[in-house]
Length: 218
Image 1: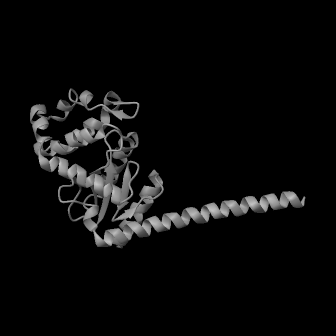
Image 2: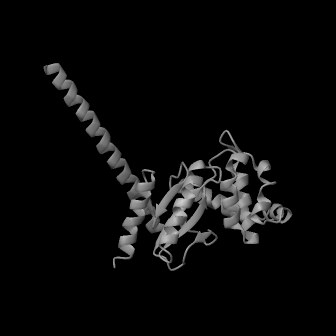
Image 3: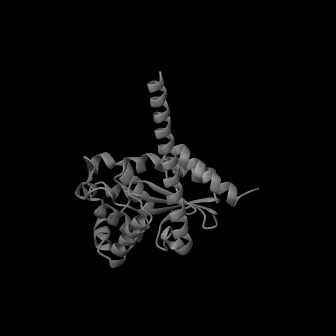
């Protein structure tokens, strides 16, 4: 009887230690990112970063994504619906975190598509056609070229634009910012500089709601 009680108490103690540790780690990461944000807010939004929503919006969702990421594809309509439901108050900013093998070239395609004013069309085509150019979680850029005209792109111009120094510079800056913010999986979300530590639809919605109430109390 005593042995059983000791086992139960030990098990409960281990669970408590795990929970307290998880809460502590979450708190430390949040503090680290918030402190970093205060000293360098541009790490979340660069002047070249594409965005959806009003520039007057007080709630800014920064998403680090990889076009080869299945979860990014799944979350995209969810985020768009939030923007539609809160027009003028919430804005989405897209950054690159090409974590899949081969995705460095893919995000260069995406960045270069801005030269033709086709960023969002290109992103949607990439996400919708993932199964055609992502093989065993590896990006195959060569399989994307025949698909990209669906976005209304001039492919020859796109190939030339990809060679521009600013395309490489912007992609590398996003990668550096992602590392600085400890983004090691996609999608990585920040709302007004606060990180989504535990990923999930409800968790992201709650983070957005929290910042929304602070920004629009009435």
